[in-house]
Amino acid sequence: MNAFWDLLFSPAGLVLYAGFWALKIVAGAWVLSKLVLLLPARMQVWAEDKLVRLRLMKRKVGPLG
Image (cartoon, rainbow, N blue to C red; front, side):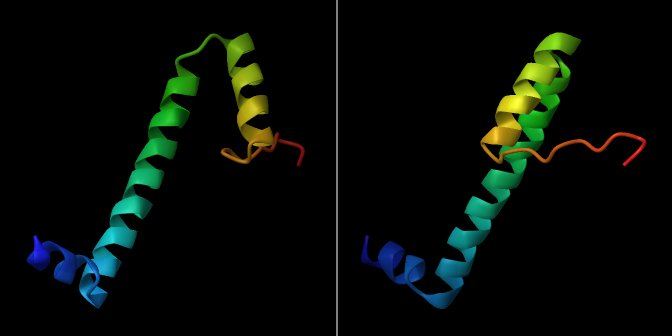
């Protein structure tokens, strides 16, 4: 078990740990965006509004700006 903690608290271990969380967040955002696309149109608008308010999704810009 000591070898595990030695690896985790080494510089390489900290980079691996940070990389794991970055990958997990990016994959979660991708899955969330795909799930929203499966919703009916009216529910998509509602879900996107809630996610924008939580700052989990950026507001889509229309063709005029």
